[in-house]
Image 1 (spheres, rainbow, N blue to C red):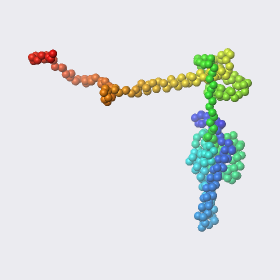
Image 2: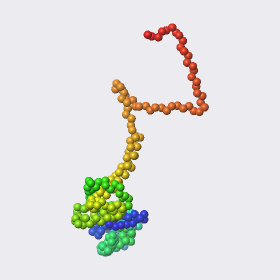
Image 3: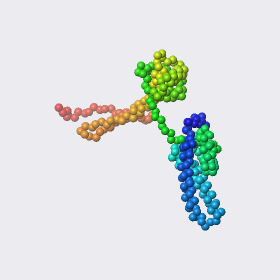
Length: 311
Protein backbone atom coordinates (compact mmCIF):
# COMPACT_ATOMS: atom_id res chain seq x y z
CA UNK A 1 0.00 0.00 0.00
CA UNK A 2 1.26 3.46 -0.91
CA UNK A 3 0.80 6.29 1.60
CA UNK A 4 0.16 9.39 -0.51
CA UNK A 5 -0.38 12.72 1.25
CA UNK A 6 -2.74 15.24 -0.37
CA UNK A 7 -2.54 19.02 -0.11
CA UNK A 8 -4.98 18.88 2.82
CA UNK A 9 -2.58 16.61 4.76
CA UNK A 10 -4.83 13.58 4.21
CA UNK A 11 -3.03 10.26 3.89
CA UNK A 12 -4.38 8.11 1.07
CA UNK A 13 -3.91 4.36 1.24
CA UNK A 14 -3.63 3.36 -2.44
CA UNK A 15 -2.51 0.02 -3.84
CA UNK A 16 -0.15 0.58 -6.78
CA UNK A 17 -0.53 -1.82 -9.69
CA UNK A 18 2.43 -4.08 -10.30
CA UNK A 19 4.06 -5.20 -13.52
CA UNK A 20 1.98 -8.32 -14.34
CA UNK A 21 -1.39 -6.59 -14.13
CA UNK A 22 -0.12 -3.51 -15.95
CA UNK A 23 1.43 -5.62 -18.70
CA UNK A 24 -1.84 -7.49 -19.20
CA UNK A 25 -3.79 -4.21 -19.39
CA UNK A 26 -1.34 -2.72 -21.91
CA UNK A 27 -1.48 -5.91 -23.99
CA UNK A 28 -5.27 -5.75 -24.18
CA UNK A 29 -5.15 -2.08 -25.15
CA UNK A 30 -2.53 -2.73 -27.84
CA UNK A 31 -4.56 -5.57 -29.32
CA UNK A 32 -7.57 -3.29 -29.69
CA UNK A 33 -5.58 -0.33 -31.03
CA UNK A 34 -3.49 -2.41 -33.45
CA UNK A 35 -6.60 -4.15 -34.79
CA UNK A 36 -8.23 -0.78 -35.36
CA UNK A 37 -5.07 0.56 -36.96
CA UNK A 38 -4.87 -2.37 -39.38
CA UNK A 39 -8.51 -1.95 -40.40
CA UNK A 40 -8.06 1.78 -40.95
CA UNK A 41 -4.82 1.21 -42.88
CA UNK A 42 -6.51 -1.37 -45.11
CA UNK A 43 -9.27 1.10 -45.88
CA UNK A 44 -6.80 3.90 -46.57
CA UNK A 45 -4.85 1.72 -49.01
CA UNK A 46 -7.87 1.43 -51.27
CA UNK A 47 -8.88 5.06 -50.71
CA UNK A 48 -5.43 6.50 -51.54
CA UNK A 49 -4.58 4.22 -54.45
CA UNK A 50 -4.67 7.13 -56.89
CA UNK A 51 -2.31 9.32 -54.84
CA UNK A 52 1.46 9.48 -55.18
CA UNK A 53 3.92 7.90 -52.79
CA UNK A 54 4.51 11.06 -50.71
CA UNK A 55 0.79 11.59 -50.10
CA UNK A 56 0.28 7.97 -49.12
CA UNK A 57 3.24 8.14 -46.71
CA UNK A 58 1.78 11.28 -45.11
CA UNK A 59 -1.60 9.60 -44.73
CA UNK A 60 0.05 6.51 -43.18
CA UNK A 61 1.97 8.61 -40.63
CA UNK A 62 -1.17 10.59 -39.79
CA UNK A 63 -3.20 7.43 -39.28
CA UNK A 64 -0.45 5.96 -37.07
CA UNK A 65 -0.33 9.03 -34.87
CA UNK A 66 -4.12 9.27 -34.73
CA UNK A 67 -4.87 5.64 -33.85
CA UNK A 68 -1.88 4.58 -31.74
CA UNK A 69 -1.18 7.92 -30.04
CA UNK A 70 -4.22 10.18 -30.24
CA UNK A 71 -6.88 7.58 -29.45
CA UNK A 72 -5.19 6.30 -26.22
CA UNK A 73 -4.74 9.89 -25.03
CA UNK A 74 -8.39 10.71 -25.75
CA UNK A 75 -9.61 7.52 -24.09
CA UNK A 76 -7.62 8.10 -20.88
CA UNK A 77 -8.72 11.75 -20.75
CA UNK A 78 -12.41 11.08 -21.26
CA UNK A 79 -12.52 8.01 -19.02
CA UNK A 80 -10.38 9.62 -16.26
CA UNK A 81 -7.64 7.01 -16.49
CA UNK A 82 -9.69 3.93 -17.33
CA UNK A 83 -8.85 2.44 -20.70
CA UNK A 84 -10.36 -0.82 -21.94
CA UNK A 85 -7.47 -2.93 -20.68
CA UNK A 86 -7.28 -1.15 -17.33
CA UNK A 87 -11.03 -1.49 -16.90
CA UNK A 88 -10.79 -5.23 -17.55
CA UNK A 89 -7.93 -5.62 -15.06
CA UNK A 90 -9.39 -3.32 -12.41
CA UNK A 91 -6.75 -0.59 -12.78
CA UNK A 92 -6.90 3.17 -13.03
CA UNK A 93 -4.48 6.04 -13.66
CA UNK A 94 -4.57 8.80 -11.02
CA UNK A 95 -2.43 11.77 -10.09
CA UNK A 96 0.17 11.61 -7.36
CA UNK A 97 -2.32 13.17 -4.95
CA UNK A 98 -4.99 10.59 -5.81
CA UNK A 99 -7.12 12.87 -8.04
CA UNK A 100 -8.31 12.12 -11.58
CA UNK A 101 -5.92 12.82 -14.44
CA UNK A 102 -6.41 15.55 -17.04
CA UNK A 103 -5.44 16.00 -20.65
CA UNK A 104 -1.86 17.08 -19.91
CA UNK A 105 -1.22 13.95 -17.87
CA UNK A 106 -2.61 11.69 -20.58
CA UNK A 107 -0.62 13.58 -23.24
CA UNK A 108 2.71 13.08 -21.47
CA UNK A 109 1.96 9.40 -20.79
CA UNK A 110 0.90 8.80 -24.39
CA UNK A 111 3.87 10.61 -25.91
CA UNK A 112 6.40 8.71 -23.80
CA UNK A 113 4.44 5.50 -24.29
CA UNK A 114 5.34 5.58 -27.99
CA UNK A 115 9.03 5.33 -27.01
CA UNK A 116 8.65 2.97 -24.06
CA UNK A 117 6.03 0.58 -25.42
CA UNK A 118 6.20 0.76 -29.22
CA UNK A 119 9.76 1.74 -30.12
CA UNK A 120 11.48 -0.58 -27.61
CA UNK A 121 8.67 -3.17 -27.40
CA UNK A 122 7.96 -2.42 -23.73
CA UNK A 123 11.47 -3.20 -22.46
CA UNK A 124 12.10 0.31 -21.14
CA UNK A 125 8.72 0.36 -19.43
CA UNK A 126 9.38 -3.03 -17.79
CA UNK A 127 12.77 -1.96 -16.44
CA UNK A 128 11.42 1.33 -15.11
CA UNK A 129 8.46 -0.41 -13.48
CA UNK A 130 10.69 -2.95 -11.77
CA UNK A 131 13.09 -0.29 -10.50
CA UNK A 132 10.35 2.06 -9.26
CA UNK A 133 9.07 1.54 -5.73
CA UNK A 134 5.47 2.10 -6.84
CA UNK A 135 5.77 0.34 -10.20
CA UNK A 136 5.77 3.49 -12.34
CA UNK A 137 7.14 3.74 -15.86
CA UNK A 138 8.83 6.83 -17.31
CA UNK A 139 5.55 8.22 -18.60
CA UNK A 140 4.12 8.12 -15.07
CA UNK A 141 7.22 9.73 -13.59
CA UNK A 142 7.22 12.69 -16.00
CA UNK A 143 3.42 13.07 -15.93
CA UNK A 144 3.15 12.83 -12.15
CA UNK A 145 0.71 9.91 -12.27
CA UNK A 146 0.30 6.50 -10.70
CA UNK A 147 -1.55 3.35 -11.79
CA UNK A 148 -3.52 1.91 -8.89
CA UNK A 149 -5.73 -1.10 -8.30
CA UNK A 150 -9.40 -0.21 -8.02
CA UNK A 151 -10.80 -3.69 -7.40
CA UNK A 152 -9.25 -4.93 -4.20
CA UNK A 153 -10.52 -8.25 -2.84
CA UNK A 154 -12.56 -7.56 0.27
CA UNK A 155 -11.37 -9.13 3.47
CA UNK A 156 -13.78 -10.96 5.72
CA UNK A 157 -14.46 -8.95 8.85
CA UNK A 158 -14.25 -11.16 11.92
CA UNK A 159 -16.14 -10.09 15.06
CA UNK A 160 -14.30 -9.41 18.27
CA UNK A 161 -14.87 -12.28 20.74
CA UNK A 162 -16.91 -11.30 23.81
CA UNK A 163 -15.15 -11.00 27.17
CA UNK A 164 -15.76 -13.46 30.01
CA UNK A 165 -19.04 -12.81 31.85
CA UNK A 166 -17.27 -11.97 35.10
CA UNK A 167 -15.43 -9.09 33.36
CA UNK A 168 -18.44 -7.51 31.63
CA UNK A 169 -19.01 -3.94 32.86
CA UNK A 170 -15.99 -3.97 35.16
CA UNK A 171 -14.20 -1.14 33.34
CA UNK A 172 -17.07 1.35 33.18
CA UNK A 173 -15.04 4.12 34.84
CA UNK A 174 -11.92 3.76 32.70
CA UNK A 175 -10.88 6.83 30.69
CA UNK A 176 -10.46 5.74 27.06
CA UNK A 177 -10.12 9.19 25.46
CA UNK A 178 -6.31 9.05 25.23
CA UNK A 179 -6.18 5.73 23.37
CA UNK A 180 -5.29 6.39 19.69
CA UNK A 181 -7.13 4.77 16.81
CA UNK A 182 -4.02 2.90 15.73
CA UNK A 183 -3.85 1.06 19.04
CA UNK A 184 -7.55 0.18 18.86
CA UNK A 185 -7.00 -1.21 15.37
CA UNK A 186 -4.02 -3.28 16.50
CA UNK A 187 -6.00 -4.69 19.44
CA UNK A 188 -8.95 -5.52 17.21
CA UNK A 189 -6.74 -7.28 14.66
CA UNK A 190 -5.11 -9.32 17.39
CA UNK A 191 -8.42 -10.35 18.98
CA UNK A 192 -9.91 -11.42 15.66
CA UNK A 193 -6.85 -13.52 14.75
CA UNK A 194 -5.68 -14.72 18.14
CA UNK A 195 -6.82 -18.29 17.46
CA UNK A 196 -4.64 -18.44 14.33
CA UNK A 197 -1.42 -17.49 16.14
CA UNK A 198 1.03 -19.62 18.00
CA UNK A 199 0.08 -19.64 21.71
CA UNK A 200 3.43 -18.30 22.87
CA UNK A 201 3.55 -15.57 20.23
CA UNK A 202 -0.08 -14.68 20.93
CA UNK A 203 0.52 -14.32 24.66
CA UNK A 204 3.50 -12.04 24.05
CA UNK A 205 1.49 -9.86 21.69
CA UNK A 206 -1.41 -9.67 24.14
CA UNK A 207 0.92 -8.66 26.98
CA UNK A 208 2.53 -5.93 24.87
CA UNK A 209 -0.84 -4.55 23.72
CA UNK A 210 -2.15 -4.64 27.29
CA UNK A 211 0.89 -2.68 28.52
CA UNK A 212 0.35 -0.06 25.80
CA UNK A 213 -3.32 0.20 26.75
CA UNK A 214 -2.52 0.59 30.45
CA UNK A 215 0.05 3.28 29.62
CA UNK A 216 -2.59 5.22 27.65
CA UNK A 217 -5.44 4.89 30.14
CA UNK A 218 -3.45 5.19 33.36
CA UNK A 219 -5.48 2.42 34.99
CA UNK A 220 -3.60 -0.79 35.86
CA UNK A 221 -4.93 -4.11 34.71
CA UNK A 222 -6.60 -6.22 37.42
CA UNK A 223 -4.36 -8.79 39.05
CA UNK A 224 -4.81 -12.33 37.82
CA UNK A 225 -6.71 -11.33 34.66
CA UNK A 226 -5.17 -12.68 31.42
CA UNK A 227 -4.03 -10.03 28.97
CA UNK A 228 -6.30 -11.29 26.19
CA UNK A 229 -9.35 -11.23 28.47
CA UNK A 230 -8.42 -7.72 29.61
CA UNK A 231 -8.25 -6.54 26.00
CA UNK A 232 -11.62 -8.15 25.22
CA UNK A 233 -13.28 -6.44 28.16
CA UNK A 234 -11.87 -3.00 27.32
CA UNK A 235 -12.85 -3.27 23.65
CA UNK A 236 -16.33 -4.40 24.69
CA UNK A 237 -16.58 -1.39 27.01
CA UNK A 238 -15.63 0.97 24.20
CA UNK A 239 -18.17 -0.58 21.85
CA UNK A 240 -20.85 -0.26 24.51
CA UNK A 241 -20.04 3.43 25.00
CA UNK A 242 -20.12 4.11 21.25
CA UNK A 243 -23.47 2.36 20.94
CA UNK A 244 -24.93 4.27 23.89
CA UNK A 245 -23.66 7.57 22.51
CA UNK A 246 -25.13 6.89 19.09
CA UNK A 247 -28.47 5.84 20.59
CA UNK A 248 -28.61 8.93 22.81
CA UNK A 249 -28.20 11.15 19.76
CA UNK A 250 -30.91 9.51 17.69
CA UNK A 251 -33.48 8.76 20.41
CA UNK A 252 -34.54 12.39 21.19
CA UNK A 253 -35.06 13.15 17.50
CA UNK A 254 -37.22 10.06 17.07
CA UNK A 255 -39.25 10.87 20.18
CA UNK A 256 -39.74 14.49 19.10
CA UNK A 257 -40.89 13.38 15.67
CA UNK A 258 -43.32 10.93 17.26
CA UNK A 259 -44.77 13.67 19.51
CA UNK A 260 -45.23 16.26 16.76
CA UNK A 261 -46.54 13.88 14.16
CA UNK A 262 -49.37 12.10 15.98
CA UNK A 263 -52.44 11.52 13.80
CA UNK A 264 -55.84 11.79 15.50
CA UNK A 265 -58.17 8.89 15.09
CA UNK A 266 -61.60 9.83 13.71
CA UNK A 267 -64.56 9.36 16.01
CA UNK A 268 -66.89 6.57 15.03
CA UNK A 269 -70.34 7.90 14.21
CA UNK A 270 -73.38 5.93 15.42
CA UNK A 271 -75.61 3.92 13.10
CA UNK A 272 -72.83 3.47 10.51
CA UNK A 273 -72.62 7.15 9.62
CA UNK A 274 -69.55 9.02 8.36
CA UNK A 275 -66.74 9.35 10.91
CA UNK A 276 -66.43 12.81 12.41
CA UNK A 277 -62.95 14.24 12.87
CA UNK A 278 -62.37 15.89 16.22
CA UNK A 279 -62.72 19.62 15.92
CA UNK A 280 -60.10 22.05 17.12
CA UNK A 281 -61.31 24.58 19.67
CA UNK A 282 -61.37 28.05 18.16
CA UNK A 283 -59.53 30.86 19.90
CA UNK A 284 -61.72 33.52 21.56
CA UNK A 285 -62.32 36.64 19.52
CA UNK A 286 -60.60 39.77 20.82
CA UNK A 287 -62.03 43.05 19.61
CA UNK A 288 -59.56 45.71 18.48
CA UNK A 289 -58.74 48.61 20.73
CA UNK A 290 -61.25 51.47 20.41
CA UNK A 291 -64.16 49.37 19.25
CA UNK A 292 -67.33 50.25 21.20
CA UNK A 293 -68.63 47.38 23.23
CA UNK A 294 -72.41 46.86 22.73
CA UNK A 295 -74.50 46.97 25.92
CA UNK A 296 -77.16 44.26 26.06
CA UNK A 297 -80.73 45.43 26.40
CA UNK A 298 -82.51 44.76 29.72
CA UNK A 299 -84.51 41.62 29.84
CA UNK A 300 -88.22 42.28 30.31
CA UNK A 301 -90.42 39.92 32.17
CA UNK A 302 -92.96 38.15 29.99
CA UNK A 303 -96.53 39.39 30.12
CA UNK A 304 -99.31 37.26 31.48
CA UNK A 305 -101.25 35.79 28.64
CA UNK A 306 -103.82 33.65 30.44
CA UNK A 307 -102.40 30.40 29.03
CA UNK A 308 -101.43 28.02 31.68
CA UNK A 309 -98.34 25.96 31.16
CA UNK A 310 -98.98 22.47 30.06
CA UNK A 311 -99.45 20.10 32.87
